Image 1 (cartoon, rainbow, N blue to C red):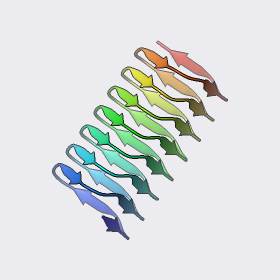
Image 2: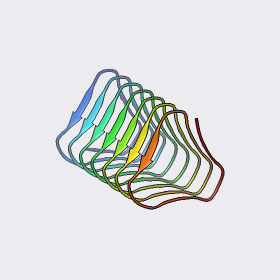
Image 3: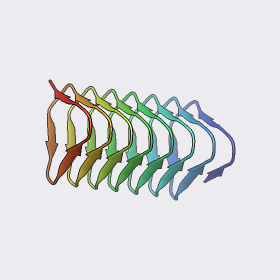
Length: 136
């Protein structure tokens, strides 16, 4: 799926291939992507998000539900997850990262900004945070 402008989905979204969005992406339901995701604008998901491939976001990313990613995550700005977050690959965040639930990363995690996790945090490989880190 290729979208050269903004994308707004009022229900759930299912994509069997890769997804490229040049603008902002807003999904009011759950999102399931069986391929990779590339978003050049902000990405806002009000439901749960499941990605079987890698996820690259050049702007901010906000998920109101749980987030499960089977590949790597790269976010150039801030990342906010209001539910639990599970990442099977590596995670790199150039901005701040805030997780209200539990966070599990099976690969390496690098955060260039501050990191706040209100639940449990488990990283099975190396973790580097260039800013402050608070886990409640």
